Length: 70
Image 1 (tube, helix red, strand yellow):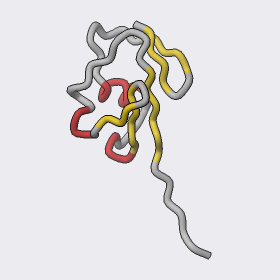
Image 2 (cartoon, rainbow, N blue to C red; image 1 turned 180 degrees about the horizontal axis):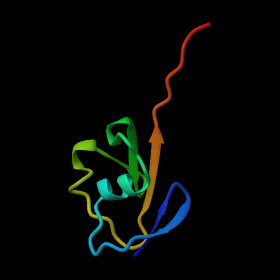
Image 3 (cartoon, rainbow, N blue to C red; image 1 turned 45 degrees about the horizontal axis):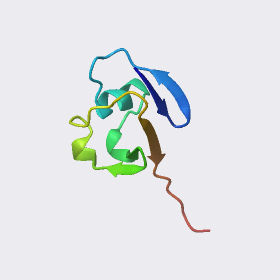
């Protein structure tokens, strides 16, 4: 199956890949520290393992960035 992750095409071998497995295969160490959009819609982190991907899906990982004051 082909999906797009952060603008890059990826082949997924699993028959029914879930969002959590895609996060792990992309070396996201702490899935709780990223926001994820699937086809333009945000997915709750509690639903990552239950969200099954389909051919042509577009996944975006949005990383939280901290900052400070000067």
